[in-house]
Length: 268
Image 1 (cartoon, rainbow, N blue to C red):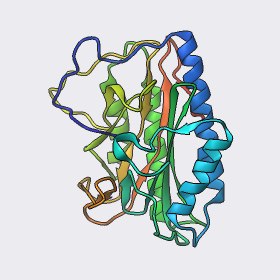
Image 2: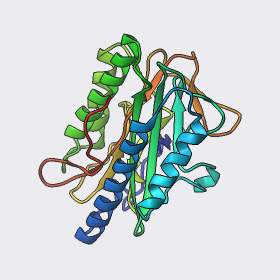
Image 3: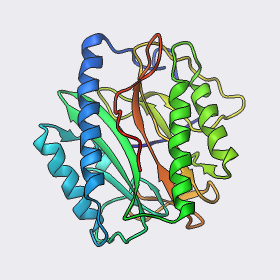
């Protein structure tokens, strides 16, 4: 689940990333693995004609059977177990009566709580296939995510992640959503630091340290970057009605290569 951006606020010292001990990392690794399993299970079951509420119910059952709970249900009043966002919906889609059609792209954002810790992951799936433009959007968003993850190294500034994501997206002719960003993750859904998908000149960027766990999640629009929130207070859509894609991994910063805790096969 993306965090609203307050990028002009400089995090206070001591709030710039929570360092996890080995036991905590192990717990987040377990929660992340479960989140990844739920996401894959739901993705494999997407079919034309399903309502987004039916998708959410599938995810809820997959979460329950693994002995976990949704990290999103009730969070700041969010009414569903997962965020389901279709086509022009960017993030935080509230599941309901909308039926998905052949050729739609559907973003599923899963957060689970397991033994007090959270795993957070998302992917955008084509329903039965999609047109070349949509496929290109999905590929570029995934590439941007992986480019950002490659920069999630101890000693690097968070801005290195932001720059890598932004360059991949904009070089491909797409745009990065700026109102919502990635974030730290652990005992709560949103921790410091914020992880923007773009560089804001003049903003001080915190340094990453081994033991941080962060959610990196590019939200990429096919058209303009502008978005708006629907009357439900949650669902974010593109202002121009064009497609948007969203991919997310929970990542552990180490003294060497970053570890993708929600690792899964590349999709679609």
